[in-house]
Image (cartoon, rainbow, N blue to C red; front, side, top):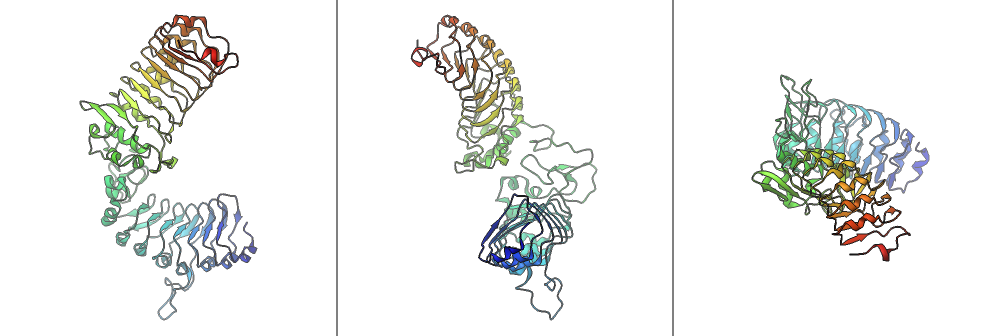
Amino acid sequence: TVMTEIGKLQEMKSLDIGHNQFSGSIPTELGLCQTLADLHLVANRFTGTVPTDIFLLTNLQGLIISENEFTGPLPEIPGSSTTMSAGERNPRGSGWFNFRQLLALSFDRNKFTGTLPIDLFRGLSRTLVTLDMGFNQLTGTLPVELGWMSHLERITAPGNQFSGTLPFEMERLTDLIQINLTSNNLTGTVPKRLCIELDGESLLMQQFGCDAILCPPGTYHPEGAASVHGGCRPCKGSRSKQLGKTKCGNDGFFLVGDIDGDGVVSPREVLRLLFVETDGEHWGDKFKSWFDLRVHQCDLPGVTCVGTDVSKIDLTDAALCTDGRGGGGDPDNCPGLPAELGNLSTLEVLLIKDRHHLQGTIPSELGKLSRLKYLDLSQCRKLSGTIPSEIGQLSALRFLNLSGGSFNGTIPDSLYSLQGLEKLWLSQNEFTGTISTRIGLLTNVREVMMSRAKFEGTIPSEIGILALLENLELYTNQLRGTIPPTMVLCRNVKRIGKCNASSFPVERHCAKR
């Protein structure tokens, strides 16, 4: 609990005890800390109601009490402007009007009930930038005073029980960047000018307009609004007037990436999904067109076509999964390479290398790319997981480069069935196990690069079958034993690198011939 003695800390400017397991209620003595500018109690187990003494903290700039177990109505001062009669004192200077510097107010994911105090919107109309109140049990309508909040940039209120229509006055929210009102009982329409104001703020709004705020009546989306994964779908036979429906009876199948709703993720939609799943908004300005389905797939930067079919994807210049300034982006905005890449049946070259912030795994669906000849995912340090066995289905593959990743597990036996493979680069990974004797099946391979990959055991004698082998690199593993005599059969070998074990001195076995 928070001790009542906290009121003695009258010079305290910041109190941040978030992400702990504190419980109990907020002591009224907290109101004595009148120099407090930031109060962060997020993600604890606080209970009870929020005392009106909170209004004594007139210097607050941030009030963040999300993810607790607070109950009851939001605090309100009796005699405020919502309840006073004619002739009573002006309520300014009391209640929510006391917060003349408050920029951020977050009380989402609690158990608050009742309606929203009108004075919350009136008192904070000139300062508040962020308002998060989702996933409570709030009821009633959204007040017209919401439109008075001239500096509001974000409002989130999903998962409540708000009803009625959206106030027309919301069109005045000209600074708004983000809005989420899904999973309520709202009806009517979204004010058009609000959609226009938001249009320039995101690619999503540009594509879906008002549907990106709430799905219109008669439609649905699993998220209640059009998202980067698709638009609102018609709900057949529905007479519901509800905005933002998330379900549609038994007609609730939603195909991720199917933007036009035809039940198929087309090649153009796959490219858009790749953009979305790797935080495409930060790839760089020249790649913005990837999101816009009006731009033909063959006109996208980084895409090469044969006729109208996608044959090559080269994202060497795209800043995948970054913050747009060279650093790593939000991991939640970068799930990684989508499985739908397997739908690009005409793809021959996939080149996504040196993307240090790209995360996730290799989709097993890549095994469906029967024409793929060149696969380079090298130096993507955050790509991890095992190599899917489906890679062995890529019968046309000539070049496979997965070096410089964080791949683990054993090499699937199916990979060694790629008899057309000419270059196999797997260095600098976290593999386990041995080099399979099946490596002898790669009869067309010219380069095998497996250094610094943590392989164990001995070098299989079957390497001697690789008559076309020119370059074999195995140094800095955990290999033991001797170099197999069958290596003399590899007449084309120009270099052997094997420098890891004490029994193999560098001078003798990192030789060229």
